[in-house]
Length: 233
Ligand code: GAR
Image 1 (cartoon, rainbow, N blue to C red):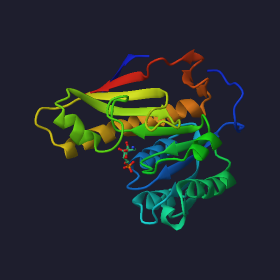
Image 2: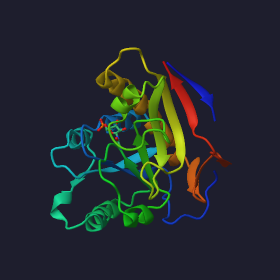
Image 3: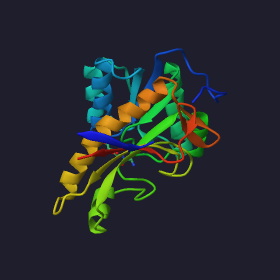
Image 4: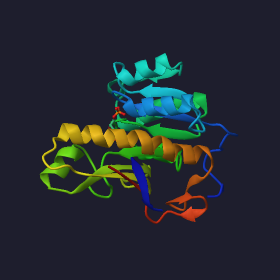
């Protein structure tokens, strides 16, 4: 069960937005359970986004199978085939741009993006990170939270900037850490939260309610100084 704790207009953008429904490219590296939540909510008409392509840097990512089964075009380039980060990112963007995405959804895409890529899609990239940012950027968040004896954990949807896990926060799902629970169980619970909050935040973008402006996130025309927080039990 979820309950909300607390809480734009369109302006000039670096790339043009299409008419509704807006198009989202989903980038994955692995299982794609977040991608599946987008597929399911899209099938129910719960999100105003056309999932135009799913891209992976790993050919064996299970998320590609999920996309194929949903009839979404898939694309894959292996980062190891490119001499450096930016040349790979330029190749990825060349593929993605064939689909004219309005939004790039990073859903377990385990690559650090080059400044070039972030600038190319400036203000149009969302990420989900499994922690209550700004706490616990980086990897292995669940174990680090347990090791620190934290009472609260969760996940954060944010706009992507050149600062790793540091862009403006939009929506957080928060839950209490249960006594004695394992990192695996905590991860499972956090991911269940992610499957609610990520499509919701992306839906806001799809509706034109959410935008990145002046280095900040804006929702319904108001500056999001702090993210919207939803608490889960
Ligand atoms: C998600 O939990 C997401 O928060 C995390 O990877 C997982 C992907 O799961 N992302 C990061 O750690 C990015 N720093 P999925 O492939 O099942 O959606």
